[in-house]
Length: 206
Image (cartoon, rainbow, N blue to C red; front, side, top):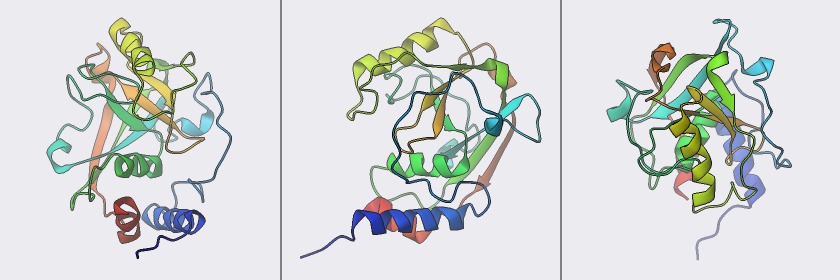
């Protein structure tokens, strides 16, 4: 009979694997069980890019077929905050959270090739979504939660919207509207291959 390691042991393994993958970019622990709090009504100073004043650096992990245009696209599959057909690209504010989100959404074994994409978005082009149902964490995704992102996208209120992450309690994600008139302001796109630590592959596939 196959046995699984205790949850606490697996989380320690995940923390160490993430730390080794991104040795100087993230907090020591991204799996700590914290009490959920509403998304901040502003982007905190630590979210802002030190190298590009007035901007925020955003990250996402993409597959081989997405690496040429990692922040472009039209109609998309359904996500937590948007329904199928709504133009939406999901990104994060740290590379570690981007990797966690990517692994969490892999239906099977993570692909052999993956890429870390990053870009800068002007701070003033980012809205903060604060009014959303208390059920936003639930899975399968809820229609009433998706309607929040759908309404934001349809209104073209901003290039991006900050929302809480269900994967990492105190982290935040960004929904980017690639159909927004300000999409050319997504600048400094860089794409680099990323090696996924074997321990992360093992945990993601278990």
